[in-house]
Amino acid sequence: MPLEIIPFILGPLNTNTYLAADRATGSAVLIDPAEGAGDAVREAGSRGWDLQAVWLTHAHFDHFSGVQEALDALGRPIPVGLYPLDLPLWRGKGGAARFGMEIDPGPEPGLLFTAGEELSLGESRLNVRLIPGHTSGHVVFYSPADRTVFCGDVIFAGSIGRPDRTEGDFDRLVEGIRRELLSLPDDTRLLPGHGPATTVGRERLDNPYLRQRAS
Image (tube, rainbow, N blue to C red):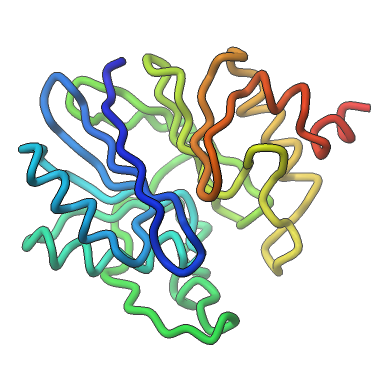
C-alpha cells in the first residue's frame, strides 16, 4: 500500500484525525485535525515525514478545531484545503457555538478543492469526490492504489452523517454515497470521521439507510 495511515481519536467529540504519508517519499498530510492535533504533528516529525498540507473533508468545528494547534506544533505555515461551498460554515466556526464551545479556527483555507480533482502526495494520488448532504461542500479523499477513502462524516459503520442541520439534505447525501462510494470495489476501506473503519461491501449489505434507499 503506497500510503501509511495513522489514526488519532481527538477532541471532545472523539473525532478521527488521520495522518497519512506516502511511503516512497515521506510526504504527509493531516486530515481533519481536531483538538489535540499537535500529537499527530509530533508523530510525523518523529518519523521524519514532511507534513505538506491540511485537508478538511468539511467545515464542522470538530474537524478543524486543531488546525492552529497543528500549525503551532509544526512551526511553519502549510496550506489548508476545503471545498469552497463549506467556507461560510467555516467562517461561522463550524457551529461550535451550538455546543457552547469557542475555538481558534486557524487560517482561512486557501487551498480550495474542486470535485474530481486529483491531489498529489509524493508519488501517491488521491481523488476528491463531492458528497453533499451532511454539509453543502463535504468531500471525501479516495486513494485508488490503497482502496481507501477518508470519509469524514458522510458514512459510518452502519450509519450515515446527520442530514438534519441547516445545510443537510438526506436525499442528496444518500444519492452521493451510492454514486461516489458504493460504486467502488467491495473491499475498499472506508475511514470515517467517527467510530471504526468499515468497507464498501459491508455498508452495501448492512447499512440500513442505504438498504432503505435501494428498496
